[in-house]
Each structure stands twice: as structure tokens, then as C-alpha cells.
Length: 349
Ligand SMILES: NC(=O)c1ccc[n+]([C@@H]2O[C@H](COP(=O)([O-])OP(=O)(O)OC[C@H]3O[C@@H](n4cnc5c(N)ncnc54)[C@H](OP(=O)(O)O)[C@@H]3O)[C@@H](O)[C@H]2O)c1
Picture 1 (cartoon, rainbow, N blue to C red):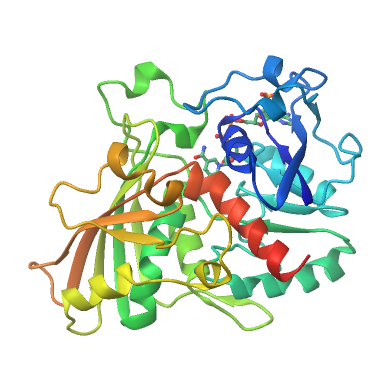
Picture 2 (cartoon, rainbow, N blue to C red):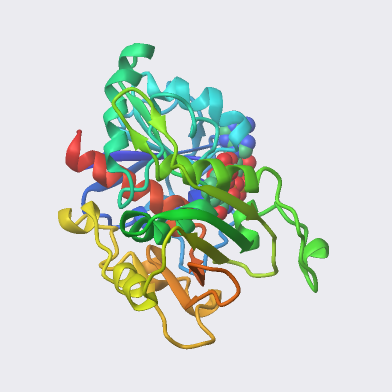
């Protein structure tokens, strides 16, 4: 068994890590870290539990430690990081001296030699790890997963980009409130309402998606050469991001062909049979009123993205549009890091 720890273990994403790691066949959760407000307490006493699933018995008595490598001195192999981004820049580097860090935070996502990975999309970016270790003189390393709305979008784009010439993409998101953490969006701001702005989200979607769908030549990543424009909005949904996607292709196409490529899409995690990999990363629904967050966010145990309303766009040449739903704290956060760690465990450790 590989011993793992969670940084930010008491938070929204941290709790998802704990739920997903409970009874994992390859990973044993042995260490939980959070702020000094929680350190020294039993996990059950330090945490206000937000998930519908019960808190696993195995974590209740673990004493939460400070978020330093010294405090986590029980030879953990992998740490999952869900600390606030402004802290992650330093904390994750401190841990990477000795540990493998699988991070959710944005602090290191677009840095040279730090892989930003979705295992179904760009597993070859893990080849950057050697250069990262040499450059920093680290025994460990950092691997990151993208922002929650980017992961869902990019998974659905992968079979399209691989099979058609994409000219441009527009995406409009309707994002769940759990994406901002428990204290992120006040109830007075979101109930009976919609907030048409999420700080830095559009920039992250635009840059991370092109980076993930780009090309790593052994030295650097050349981003994908189409254009992408995002508009991001917060809606009163607890879990599950919805996105309306509009794609312009260079050439005419058959919409059934696009549907086939999406629903038959499989990649390395499915070939390797990684534990958290969904059998079908993209689920295509034919009903006109799907996907919906409440009904579709748990597809593939929250690791699949559901696509619906796939159709030709009658207003623009060579264009199509669809709606997707992805679980933002599972495929969009903790589940993404766990799948990255499973790939690393299979290929590198
Ligand atoms: N929510 C999502 O859907 C999502 C998706 C993708 C990425 N992310 C990223 O994941 C990270 C965590 O997000 P979240 O939604 O889980 O936030 P959250 O619910 O606010 O949880 C924050 C966690 O960080 C800990 N923390 C706060 N200050 C700290 C400090 N000074 N030192 C050490 N630990 C500290 C908190 O511990 P205490 O309880 O002790 O304060 C808590 O465990 C962020 O970087 C976020 O951008 C979130």
C-alpha cells in the first residue's frame, strides 16, 4: 500500500479526498493536515462535515497536524494538496523536496516543468518530472490538475480535437457554489440569484484548456492553436458545473460522427484499468432535458462528464453545440488528483 496524506483535509475538497480514499485498494490514508486552528485536534472534532456520505470511521481519531513536512513525519509517499491557492505556492514546494505532491491548487499549474495533467488527455506531460526534480534538486515533485470547469470541458473536447480541425470555441458556464469552498459564496448572494463573475475563472479556463490540449516537445508546451473564449457564472446549485459549449470547425462534419467519437472515447486510464477511471469518461444523453446537475453529476461515480443536446449549430457554418455537466469536487478536484496519483503510482513510483 502507498501511504498518503491530505493537506487542507478539513475543507470542501479535503473532505472529498477523504471520502474517495476510504477503502482505496492502493492508497492508505495515514496523515491529515490543516491550519493551526485545527492542528492537534481529532479530525472529527476539527471538522464540520459537509458531505452526504458519512465521515469514514477510519479518519475520526486521526490527529490533524500542521501543514509542514516536519509535522507529517510518518513517511507518507504522496500528499494530496487542497490548501488555499495563496498558501499553496510555498507549502507545495516545501513538501516536494521529499514527497510526491498531487495538487488541486492553481499556484503551480502553468509553471515550466510542472505537469498539468488529465490522465485521459495528456499523460505524456508527466515526462516533465525529471527536469523538475533536477532543476530544484528535489526527491519529490509536484503534479497538478486543472481548474474544475476546465477539466470537464477539456475531457469533452479531447475526442473532438483529435478527430476534427477546431477553429474556435466559446463556453458559458453555470458553476456550483461548492466550487468556491464552504465559506466562498454567502447564501444572501446566491439564493434567488445568479452571480455573473467568478474571479480569474475565465482566464484559467482559457489558458489551461489550450495548455492541456497542446503539445509537449520534451522542452516546453506549445498550446493548442485554436481560440477559446469563456464566460463564467455562479448559480444556486450545490454540486455539479454545467457548461454550454459552442465549437466552430474548419470543415463540414457529420454530427453522428462527433457523437460516436465522444461516447466511444477511452484513453490510458481505461486501458490501465486505474481504480478511479470511469469506464466511459464521456456519457452522451439523448433526452432534450439532460444533462442536469442533480441527475447527472454522479455519472461514473462523479468521474464521468455527461454531454447532452449535441447538435449542429444552424446559425454558423461548420459549427456544433452541446451542454455538459461534471462533478466539480470529484472529477473537477479531489477525484482528478486521485486519478493523477493512480497514474503516477502505475507509471513512476
Ligand atoms: N471546491 C472546488 O470545487 C475546487 C475545485 C478545484 C480546485 N479547488 C482548490 O482547492 C483548494 C481548496 O479549496 P476548498 O474549496 O476545499 O477550500 P475550503 O473549503 O475553504 O478549505 C480550505 C482548507 O485549507 C485549510 N487552510 C486554511 N488556511 C490554512 C493555513 N494557513 N495553513 C494550512 N491550511 C490552511 C483549511 O483548514 P482549517 O479548517 O483548519 O481552516 C481547510 O482544510 C483551493 O486551492 C481551491 O482553489 C477547489
